[in-house]
Length: 342
Image (cartoon, rainbow, N blue to C red; front, top):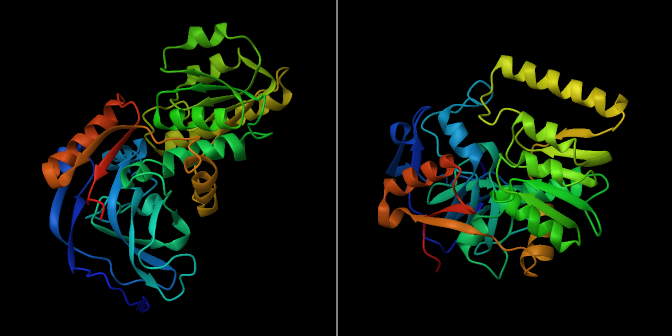
């Protein structure tokens, strides 16, 4: 660690933070403590953020449950949470893009840490917060919106644009809600289904879609999508066949075999439907693009289902946050409010 630039903010030595102590159900493995050390020592490119809000994603409760434990090994106690919005209170000597006092938002990736009063991370993980929305709304954006941004404008070929026809499976999910708004913002023709059960509807829509974007998963999505994609159309999923996403050697072999099989038929089959499994990657330039082109222009709005406040409800706010996310009944993003805006 290196020295950081001095700050006018009073940074405590300990903080309130969620603590994951193992894998399992949230009420068994997650606690809220007031004596967690603040990670104030920064490398040259790191920033320290006073967190105002975080949001939960499907991957958060799956990691807590141990679904990825064979692939990603956590060190306990572990502070969970990926999406974050807050204020920079300290910066490393090599930080060029930000200064102390800047309001930022970002996705911490598998390092996690946003369900705490303070979090540190490399400056490349963050962008300036959109100036027309609250901290809670900003925390609702990074992972879900950037995932759909990448699917529509980076993974789809050609990128979704004017006159493109896209079918979004899971339009009421967080990623689906952002995808609908992003696609409409660039003039695409958008159709959305809202549940895994809408296979018959999909098959009545006609064979003319450029892209089917699957936000909910299950093998039947791919089977049904082939009935509505045009020749050469793309099926892009962020979930895959296994909606439980339990990673094991057997599941990895199965997924690999399935991908190879579908890629083979996308090349040699008569319809040439391309099957694509997309994993989000962190990119601050894309967060900047989302901010300036879509959020600050009002073309895309963060949609929030519930805000949980741990200042009011203590650890119960965390439990309700995870349980609502796992129920898959949220209509929009679920937010953890950590500090009030100054």
